[in-house]
Length: 204
Ligand code: TYD
Image 1: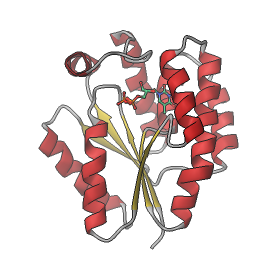
Image 2 (image 1 turned 30 degrees about the horizontal axis):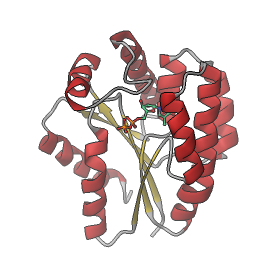
Image 3 (image 1 turned 120 degrees about the vertical axis):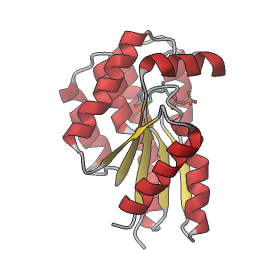
């Protein structure tokens, strides 16, 4: 059985993280080995870079470079080895988030992001990306009820409108890789759609 790389994406508050562990459990029940991880993060070095990116003031170029530095370590030490062992990797965010947040949200050059993406990933792309899509207004309400804001979560609605447009642009550039999930639906309905997407796309 070959490995599969599945990423979970969406604006803050869309609810993607809720669905990773249940998805892992469902896959394990079918006999698959599953690794759950996240970005920025997933290795000791990348988790340290995550702390900086989420909580230290810096400009957009530095932010972009740190996110990709974290990704390089994560791909080399965790993602690529797991895929080589034939495992399923479920990753909470990946490079689509960089295009959405640093590219569309912060206005960083998409050409720079493409260059870094190619250098860091050497062709590696997710097999399936689940995009939990939600109105920024609704996501902001959910966040307000849930937690203290980091550097991204503290941004305004206009920022999250741009991030959402970034995800849509990435979907349009690679529609065969993406599955858009309407995250305004209830949690159990969203879970059904995740399971359906995996059934349709995972073994294809
Ligand atoms: P998130 O994945 O929402 O984790 P949590 O549920 O713990 O808040 O937080 C990660 C933040 O990092 C999120 O606001 C988006 C941001 N981010 C980027 O800006 N660029 C990236 O490339 C990645 C992976 C994340």
